[in-house]
Length: 66
Image 1 (cartoon, one colour):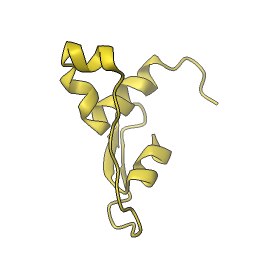
Image 2: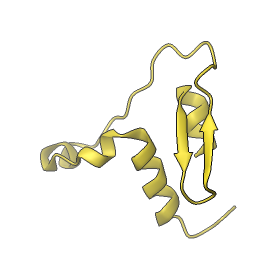
Image 3: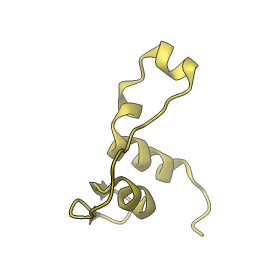
């Protein structure tokens, strides 16, 4: 999740470690977006459009910690 926050240059809250990852002052980020697969777009999954929620759910689904 820290990698996602860094690459996007955003501030994200990581629920798993209860920490705010703040890379909002990082310069050089020209563009950041979330690209969803077509089935997700058709289902109108709004939570996946929110980068913080998307990455928190990805962390929760991950079983390995390395």
